[in-house]
Length: 169
Image: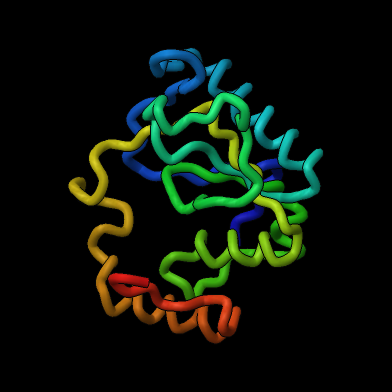
């Protein structure tokens, strides 16, 4: 396989449209490449200082969902537009499991299990185009059957901690 010599690896959706800063009264677009690189490096360094290997960002650029007293979350959804991890530690202790279609979700749960923290920087959002409307990526393979298979694998791995939510639960 391919060997990548990098301290951090960042995985992002193929339909990322923009990076938004959500601190303040209205979101602002971040366009400078060096600023975006700094956002990624600072998140990676904060992640490492917090004692974990996996980092992500806000899922929405809606300023009403930003809590100014809590710029960072330690648990939350990381299945989204962009995520990063410290390559060496992630490859040594976690790795993506090829049996999972939603391998990032499985990896995030295993990071939580091992490190107890996911680093989520809510000050920035890597905004995609409209969800589930563009071709490419995994759109052609994402089916209800595949999602149910992933759910079953997760239930086998994590036991009763994983439950299927239905309407009203």
